[in-house]
Length: 417
Image (tube, rainbow, N blue to C red; front, side, top):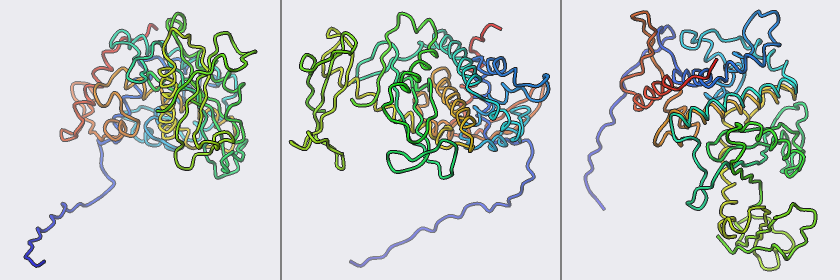
């Protein structure tokens, strides 16, 4: 086929001259939102209270402030302790930030007792955040399964593998042939909050009952009293269409709690799935889960769909790996355990931002989208009328969403001092 084609010339971009002498301009300006939210929910002050014994004679940086700044940095996408420089070098917006060695010393001072105090501080802040949600929004949203709302709170527990390429303390070979850690985590399906987590060696079992109990105990301790008592709490773990049947009454459940039910799902396995000895007979895969939900609370089919909702925990883990615990900074296990706890706090800040401050599409956005649209925006600093102004570019596509978020933050009720 012959013809004549006219090719339009590609327009060139404006020529730039790049230098490193700018002033009055900041990057990651939206991350200030996270720092202020930590203050408004009381997380900063709670950290300061529980970490006060680590501040020798009241000198130097407040350890609680350092912990808050680390959580903000991780929520903003930082991957290493030295990434605090992003906040430190923009002191006009973020205030005084500890040096990298000072932050290292704080993490090195965190033992199991201090970890418990950090968890307690998060629980105090969560109580405030949930009260703020009930006063300014519709409270904590319901989780959903099969298009229906699941009453109460839904806790999802799952383990994940984190590869370490260096010989870190207690890193070990994993069941998938890798090497690293095998943390066990609990997320709240209603909001995506990271309720609890335990750092474990890479060879720790995926179904270790004692570890599940410890992580669940930590998660339950995070729930405010007003929600812990009188509220339905559903706990989901691994092993949840297709053909669904109930096997209760066909198996010996001696030793199990009263009311335990067995529900099985049969499905065609996906390519590459590993079949058990019995699955190979007919080429179908069977998955069984146990529940103590009574017969009056839904059909076996709905309970199976509700349980399959546990798969959303994989998304929360994926987000969490971009929010701190995808890599661990130290060769020392206690330092990495402290890093995991602050990563969970970072996940909280992002979740509370969505629940308390955002609407529409951004209220369900994953961390990557929040960072690109809101947190990593650049701004210009000006002064006038004895005020410091943070001016977002008038051409930034999400400038109105970001400024509205700051206004909602300013309107949140403050915790009693």
